[in-house]
Image (tube, rainbow, N blue to C red):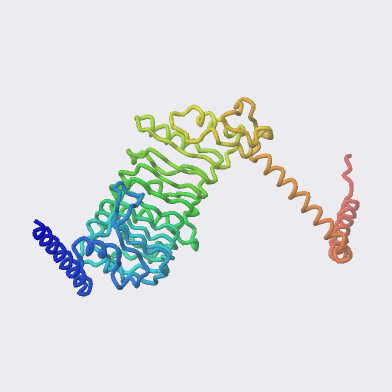
Length: 413
């Protein structure tokens, strides 16, 4: 019995030694098990990325699934995109921000690889000025494209009408502070942007961000957003708009307009009619006018009444403030607390706010003081200039008097 136990113990020790020897050989020869090989593959980027990026599977909050294969090249200081030709085929999220790219060349992704898993691209803050019409290929499943904080020029011969044409399933487009400040947005790139929307066929786009782009007006192209047939959320905050002047009846799915932090003092009659018509056919809509310089005076009474009674959901309406108005007691008052029967204007028929009238009065008085001071310090020079004019005028008056005296009086017989 003891011999049998000793024999079994020897066999067990022998098997343990063999197993340890095999593991040592695997370590020396570089053999990695299937699971270890997969972990290594998803935690390292291809060599062309120069160890400046991370390529791994990790949780990513912008998507529903718990883990995504993420390629993150944040602040890598790349000046070109050639490494993206070797983007891992399994990539689902590409973060390529904080670089110095200037211009995106054609086919930045390998044209032979169908990146069917790629859903999210972030090219923010890359100093991009030009995007070629053939830059993006094999991106048909991308749902989110972010180009915030770049310096895009899309005017004249720099216009690229088809830069988004291969994003067949794009849902979310972020263009916050995306365009150059060297041109007037309203006069130039808003027209080009409408052409891009038409040519790119973004029929599945649900959310468009155009914040912080110095947009003064939509201008004559009121139908700029009509090609975006599925648009639900439109973000135009932090611009310089004075009205909601774009068409919305062509956007049947639109349910939110964000125009916070603009220059809206009151909405025009046309804008109110347009919004009423949209919700009048059963379309739910919310509008956010918070932090605009709203004016509470007699010229705004119709707008304020509409604001408080319309069928549109006014987001954060309790925080809307009268930044100007008459009487002055309504200034800085919450609009929901203002008695609309008491608001008036500083003068009958006046076209200006009280602040404007005050400023103009100050300007007139200031100019008068400047003229008086100027005349006092240059009175001798002014006298030499004015005296000949006075003498000439006096001489002419004298001649006219003599002529009148020399005319014989009419005598009636």
